[in-house]
Length: 233
Image (spheres, rainbow, N blue to C red):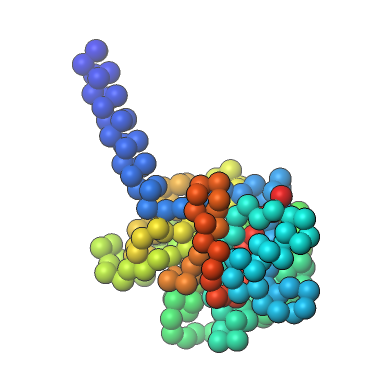
């Protein structure tokens, strides 16, 4: 019995070490949308795009708010307008895109991350989205996880490597945002969300991705993109 306990301890230690090692490839942040102030941002009061996390941070500070987390929130067009559906503070500012095309956005199924008026977060494939009682929403693609399964278009050991960021919904109903610290393929990125227990997860963007998370000493305040996710206190 003593020998068995030692072996079990070793196995648990190795497993924990592997998980810790894997976690080090990512910067991640969990948000309770019922207790924390999570919003999507695109333009300031003068209708100017924020573009960078620094610009958003400075703008919020002028309103006596502290930015505790920020990340780019999806793909954008050449004029930095959101690609696909975008809802901010219950207003639909960009229409849903169900067309076909080239690029990651159109690697179907793509999906939508949204928060209801009751601050309940969710992720669904685009075709299943119902636009009612929605406070915030951003469309992107491809889906990383669909009902607990990795997107069928992803291949293990793929050499398509890039910095990637995305969002998933945990079993607790909380939201987890993650960005790879190193270049990674879609399969491994999706699998990371799966190991966290997510059933559905959505890819947000790639090499342009930035994350501001001072509590973990991860401070990227540059960037030049469209919509931004921000959590303030």
